[in-house]
Length: 431
Image (cartoon, rainbow, N blue to C red; front, side, top):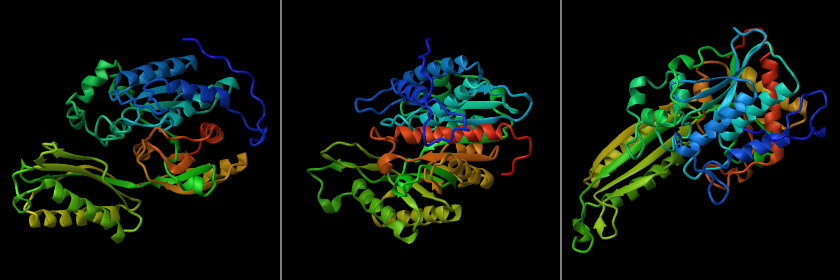
């Protein structure tokens, strides 16, 4: 595969001259090239995990890692790793990365920035001929989005042993295709021996996916942790009947009951400020215009930085919905799909992100991540840090998702400085 050549970089005034400079043009070109796989008409992406487009971008990413002379391996979850040796080959590596899969209607930066930014860090180290004390690894995690296979953060969850092999074998998509079969189909089923066993630390660069940095006019976010998440499916079962022959007072209408429950779910926010409650999916059966719905299924996504509050919200919602179902004479089943505990990142790394931004002349602030990320599970294995850059308009998981070229450059420049510093440390890093 041919590699596009880029001209020498000019000095950019917002970066001090005593720092190694990433190649902004090369970075943006790489991101734009990656957006060719799963492209949607309005600039976004549909690149579901283990799809043909996922296979294609994995193949391209593999070639890019080979060009960087990285030692490549693939684990049993399809996670891809590229290792750059250090002076001490047995030292625990500094790891950085994210994911390349997207939502069904997603953007071109979510996850992709973290992987391509990590690739640019390695390319820059190669440009300058820098040898670090520790090895450096970049990683592409499988099925972070959960848009095709539930749960989300699947690849990193498997690595952290948060998802068991028995659970993996049961995972299917909406067409009942097995995760393990689809992984083999695209040629990315590796060995469990290739999972990372020890890491010195983990870094993940990501778009914020929210409005906080832009609203505060800050270039860099030092992420203090990730909110906990509870995901539920609510199944309401009434009785299907004819829309034209069944009087209103004789109906056992699951849709009407669902509408009242959904309103109650959103009202619960008033009792728990700081919580985020979302109903993102709803399905009805038989789903035709001239029949009363006999069954309705809707999802509930509950998030909060404090696990105790999130669990209380979940408990009270279950109790309220159960009472409402009894009043409406409905059968109710509430399925617990996923529960992810909140994470607090290394205070030392959070501080170092802000110090690095300050040295480079970038504004920064601390903030919590409202979304789940692979860093959540990596934090259970090693001290972890996340770097956010602003999302224009605070939008993500849509084709309109965008960040400025300058902010992308700043984020990767901060990542480079952090990786370079931590990859040359010999002391023990505290969580």
